[in-house]
Each structure stands twice: as structure tokens, then as C-alpha cells.
Image (cartoon, rainbow, N blue to C red; front, side, top):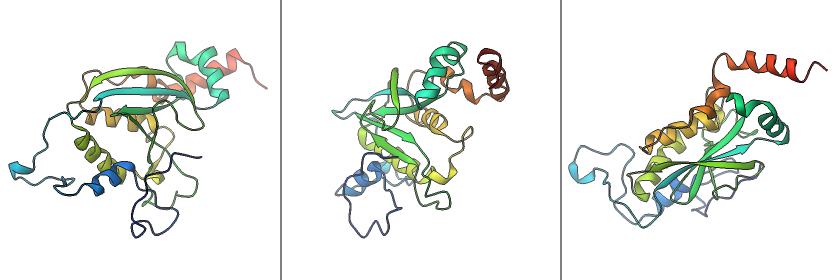
Length: 210
């Protein structure tokens, strides 16, 4: 799966082709001074401010069909029952962030699953719609710090189809951004414990075996 390359960074930081450093990490590393640590000290002078920058603090959920087959199922059967199968990314300050796995990194916890793309342009997915969740109170620099933390907390090898995926990541990021509107519950309908059985029954009764 191809994703937009991260901006160039010092060659000493990347030692092999499996090391993928997030854009947030790069942006924070490039700041000349006054870096905010992931766990700020108790000194009040280091507390995160709530001052906005000139960027756009609106937060959006961008929703995609995963492939043509699940797209057809979503349109024909699943969306109206709130058990659609989707990919989702979170846009903030003009960049979209999501969580993925990589086939070559299941045994490598150093590879982050946090990736970025231009809004509504995730490679290999079919964009469908967007949901506005309101404004984040954090500045762009503070959001970068949040994303830097997630870069280390969400390795690609921890991806799980139902418990740790793009939807659970998007919901977690939305909570951290402290927006005014809740994460759309219908996006996670497919993850409900009873959904797998009911989905199989729905497909069997609608499409039929074989």
C-alpha cells in the first residue's frame, strides 16, 4: 500500500527501510527551540497553551469504502443497518491522520501505524463522506505533540481487525482533540460484539449460499 512519503529528515534518524517516522515527529524535531516534552514537567512555564494559530482547527472525520466489494455491501445492505464496513481518517489543521498495518512489520514494534495523507485522498480507498466534529481548542503545535505521542503508542504490529484499527484510532484521536461533537457511533457498528454473527446471517439470507 502506497502512502504519501514523510518529509525528509536526517539520514541518521532512519537506519533502514522499515523505519517510518510520522510527519508530526518531523515537525516537532524541526522546531528550533522550546520543544514540549511528551510528559511536560510540573513547572507552569512548560504547560501547554490553548492559543490558536492561523491554521484551521476544525476537526473532520473522512469516511471511505475499503474496497469495491465492501462498498457494494455498504450501499446495498449494511449502511442502513449501521453496520457498514469503513476506513476512517481524522483531519485537523489541513492534514488527515489514520492508523494502518504493514505486511512487513508484524514483528517490528518500532514501525508506527500512524500515517497521514491529504484530506479525502487516502490511497487505495474510495472516499464517501465527511462529518464535522467542531473545533479543537489546541494549537497546531500542540496537535503535533499529540500526534507525536500517538506515533509511538500505536505501532503497526498492534493492529487488530476489530479491537485496534483505523476506527478505534480515529475515535481515540478525536477524544484527545477535545472536540465538541461525539465520534459518530454508527461508524463503529460493525465492531459491536454481536455484529459478526448478525452480519453473516444477513448476508446468507439476502445473498444466499454459494
